[in-house]
Image 1 (cartoon, rainbow, N blue to C red):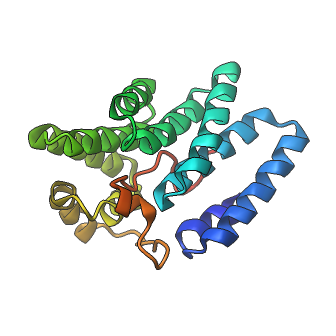
Image 2 (cartoon, helix red, strand yellow):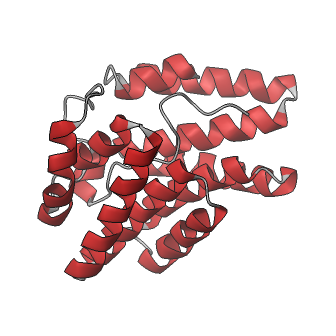
Length: 208
């Protein structure tokens, strides 16, 4: 799974990354380790929402959300809710807002940061400039607190169509000491469709 996620984002190999992720997910499913399977489903769904594979991202996130609620795994639930939120922004912004607010309520800083960025995007597309900027700034503050500089860079890279998002995130990206990962060489569907690139799981693939 980790190799698959790395190929999705760091190497820009969408087909190869998805193939590795799906192979790893199937192995986990067959092993019976439901908690790890649910977590990795959510993580994969979140990363797929970055590269614009919304159908697959939503399918993974829906299954992960159900398992996380069954298992009482709040960490995994937060990741799944973020993935569901990002895949719903264009089609159902109110549903997206509900997912993001629930993720924020869970309280995990990284998931909350991603959810705040998603809420910012919802407000952004609705034309609420002050509301969008407040949410973006809240997200960046949380990401800064976690020390995960990729969290600051990725949404800025994938949210190129929003001047407000760029204005808030660019100074943080410019000063970040961390790596600047690449997206697929062709423009991600996430950018074309107006879905931002923020995700709900850290680059260390949080343990279960």
